Image (cartoon, rainbow, N blue to C red):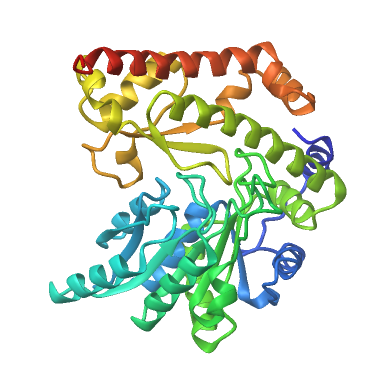
Length: 394
């Protein structure tokens, strides 16, 4: 825990007043500054804050996708996107992503999906995407993003851009990240969960930036109505911490950069272990995950009783001693042998170990990190060795 952040939260712990729905003026101003520094200028009356991105996405979906509207998401996508649409009784259609990155649908597949949904009597109105993606840990190239956003807006879709992981680029000087809101500002709502890079996961806080148009004003008002109905307010101490973090003082930015460097190193090591064993994975570029495809190891996995993503999840979770959710939880086909591996559990099981990992100049050499990576490598090497035994003799 960052001490300065804890101090801000503790100082606000005695407040008895409730935060207004959508966020207090100081928090909205801080969010405006955060986005303006990223080339997305805004004003407070186009911002809404809520207790986590799920609450905001639920409110936005309810406001945009009313009776009869359909929602489009990439395949795969963050595990929490689709359930909120289904909770509202709205159909969700998954659109394939291109080979080079996840988070943003292939533009031609998007157009074909929109055509098919309309031909079947549907009414697609909302596309949710992410340029720095969970679960694939990739960043969509600007040219692909431009083509997809152009196709989506031409079909009358409103876009929600989940930019939770935009500040976690593993190589920020080599990776170009653009927001869809920079390309089509009138058609894009941006959502950022502060737990991605600024706050601990247990302090739920997120902010949304709406288009500076009449339609954006109406959407903002409807979202506030939904948040009011849900009673979705930030706790006052968390709001104070969020305001401090969004201002990005040196302690916050230094901790964020150190955390990103640590996760990048561990992700690179995990990636090497996975691909050296014969599995497939896109090189991780952002966030704290790795998305692996074990299709090349299907035969040895079948010999272990693994034939789908749920069985793969069960096997690796037990073998690694850490959660390894299957791709079916992210909208992938159950029969596809895909799994998301998180870097966080590889950094230690206690606060002391995680702090040591963060402070170490050579975190991969620490016993607890090295042991976790050895366990990961061993699990995948066993599958590789089984696959080699399955090969027909020459």
